[in-house]
Image (cartoon, rainbow, N blue to C red; front, top):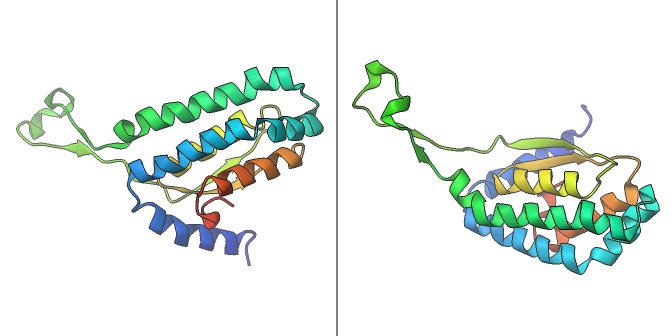
Length: 168
């Protein structure tokens, strides 16, 4: 049996359901995640400090504020970015003149995210949230140098209401 076969199978099953959820509904979970990020700032600071010895004052400017801003960006723009887009006649080849075409964004399925240790909140939460909003499931390999931060991050997504099998 291949490594992570059961996790991958569970993620694929959950992703099929998740991909049918409207983007607007997926963004409700992102809104909860952003609120939890702010509420859990002390726990996140303690975890990051224990893992990589980054002071809380530095963490606010390099991790928490950029992560909250990235989540806010998703809340405001994801629905429009993922909506079908009509292809302009300027972008069509001559032999297709007069026809109509549109670009539809579809999820990949299961996305792998390899976590970093140097910005363990911003670079992990941002990528995971983007993949989930796009309708994907995520298999996440957090950095072995930031295990406490990984636990707190996993709890944030769980507490925000994302289905548990969706992020593993």
